[in-house]
Amino acid sequence: MTGVKVVQDPATGAIIRQTGQGGVPARTRPRRPRRAAGGEWVRWLVPLLVVAFWQLASQVGWLNARVLPAPSAVLTAGWELARSGELWHHFLISLQRAGLGVLVGGGLGFFFGILTGTFRAANLLLDTTFQMVRTIPNLALIPLVILWFGIGESGKVFLIALATFFPVYLNTLHGVTGIDGRLKEMAGVYGLSPLETFRRVTLPGALPGVLVGVRYALGISWLALVVSESFGASSGIGFLAMDAREFFRTDVIVLAIVIYALIGKVADVLVRALERRLLPWQVPA
Image 1 (tube, rainbow, N blue to C red):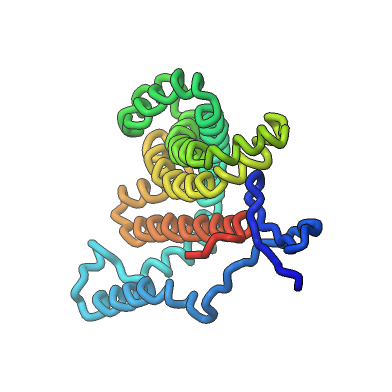
Image 2: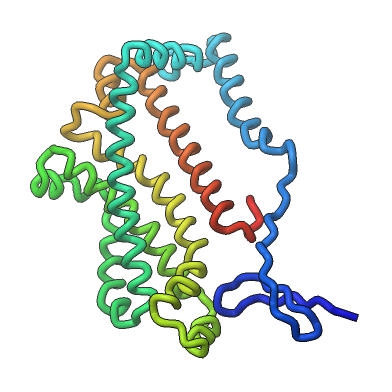
């Protein structure tokens, strides 16, 4: 009788199926957990109910239109701005700023997270400094950023990069330090080079934490974008909202807030899709 034993590769974390008679191990792809079909629409139930109640409250006069306009008024304002092309102009500029800031800040956060998580000397030298800088609010840095970079694009990208650096750094560091030490010892026993150890042990082990950090960073990037576009900006969604404030256009202000919320949701969906692609063994939330 031939038995089948399922074990986990200590170096790579991959699932290995091994025959009971000492045959050659056969690798199998990790099975992706099945998701409950037809349940995704529930995620949108509460937002839709909130919008419906909001519209109803506006129509019956419970809400003052100058304080909080109805969703239909916000949609109308969005349609007018989109038809004139003004909305797309500001949106693309904000998207460019946020994307560049996340790329720079997230990339540096990943690099230093791996560095301080792998080498104790780097951790001793750098981690305390990073933790101190992390607690400084972005608003407190604005005067200094203006002196350093002026009111151009560099200062805005700097603030976004600084805000997105720490979520990626902390989660990468946590992911690296949380790797089972026996896996690293096993990599040494197998004679893996430092580069192979990074590719087969460190990176797969830290990847769940890195992706969590990316999710946080994408959300924080839009918060930092609002702060950065609140000074010296002549374009962007933040500028659109600030300009609307001068003319008491609450519908445009609410439109900007809704755009931020939708972009945050889209970014979260993209990262979760990336998680399902790179981490197929995890149960999706």
